[in-house]
Length: 329
Image: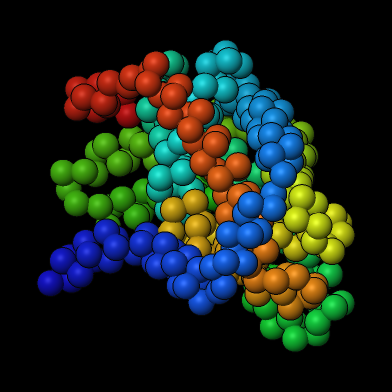
């Protein structure tokens, strides 16, 4: 019974974000939404789309630095292709877990163990996420200055960041992390999966990079976020909304982080709800206008990038046969 319930929850939970989005559209003035969409000038759309390539090139450069530290040898252009394909899977999966689909492509290219490749992708995503978390923290402090009612949210956020940091610091140390993972394998993993899971975990710390070597990827990750929110801010400019760039750059990350909740594809619905709440509370803008900015941002940052990844995926296939995986865990 529990398995059946979990299966249904896993199947339909990602639809919750779509339901939220449909409710938002239903509750707003559709004519105003349509007018706002039609008011966006094509020049700003093209300019926003043009920033996609430098954003991905910089992100790939950061990822390549981590690959180099882990002795994962993938050419820059092959890595770029894999990154784009990962974006395609992110655009159709909840919580950005689609980035894990880079792993089979990396496996085919490098023949490195899955555990090591998993950590590589995990590190890239988490390092970049932490650069966003810093922007969110500054944004919350900014909102706190404008509205002291946000102090509870700020407190919860700091607790969350502290928990994440403690967990990461625990697992960074091989002796601690590996020991705990093997205990989990011993008591929680079914017998027939124990060997493969143990082999998977044992390669986690293979060529693990030193923390100081991750500073440059962290800074490059922050630059990519600035580009992301600059792409979206172009729609603010096109609609003539009275939102200063600096405020948008630090406040929209709050909505973006809300979209990380794995109840929707690409944060759709949740991000729009959070964005509307934040910007209509602090600035003289309409809900319809913020909805349009957020949706166009989604189409530009997620869908357009994912479309490129989809087209690239058509030129590349990955063998995922049973015999291809087991021996090289």
